[in-house]
Image 1 (cartoon, helix red, strand yellow):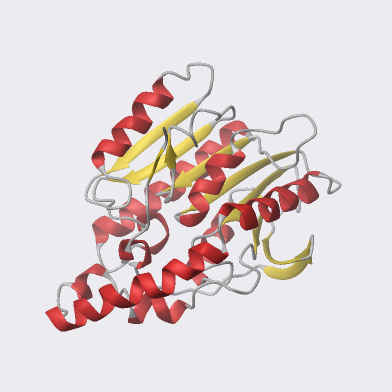
Image 2 (cartoon, rainbow, N blue to C red):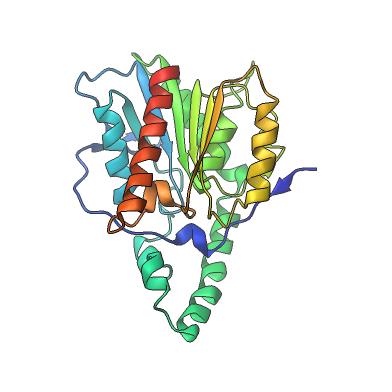
Amino acid sequence: MSEKIGMSSCCLSGALHGGKPTGRVDTIGGLQTYIAEPKSGSKAKTVVFISDVFGWEFPNTRLLADEYALAGFYTYIPDFHEGDSLPISFLQNVEPPLKKQEQLSMTEKATNAATVPTTLGPWLVKHREAVSRPLIDGFINTIRMTPGTDKIGAVGFCWGGRYAILQAHGKTEGSVGGVDAAFAAHPSLVAVPGDFDPVSKPLSLAFGTKDSLVDEGTRGKILDLMSTKTEVEHEIRFYEGQVHGFALRSDWSSEKDKEAMDEATKQGIEWMSKYL
């Protein structure tokens, strides 16, 4: 039986980063999509971001897509939530950065603890796998048929991290979706072993050692399972002292946290460079 790992308020922790995204917005496959193009304009190496619960408009995600474009990847961030991502204000007001959390009173913490499930729970039901996966598979299929596209990678974070793993199952005859390589940072809601047994494409995973959604025992199970898949290229990296969301929402005022985010970005880019 697969063990499914849930999502807590930790999924919503983190910081909003400064900077101005440089890409453009277009409609692709019926979905609003942020596009960050490499200087060459080539689609030969394409990456599809599958965002966290804050969606395709979250500045941190767009800035990261720009980094992938600078590294030579034609990068898409589709609106897989179809206009229903959690608002960015929810990040700051309900789950502020960890430093601020330490300063909250017990009453404030209790209020946050009550607010998170009442907001996040219904959202997760609305965007369950039966709804979201066909959108993701269909978009991947549309991109694969786009002239100039050769290999496709999936990069996912938190909620989207699990779907990046599912895309690493590959494409079977008669199906849609499936990528050539995947990178998942702090994936949530994963089923162990169910989401990992079918992996057939190169998969890179990044976890923080203080990730409350995927605890040490679960990380160990994933590590053990993937170690048996000798026919599949994979890597699993653990970032000391990092919490859930670190690869996308680290607090840049902390040099250690900023360094971990930079290293995770490098991990994803190097993986895509190797397998796309």
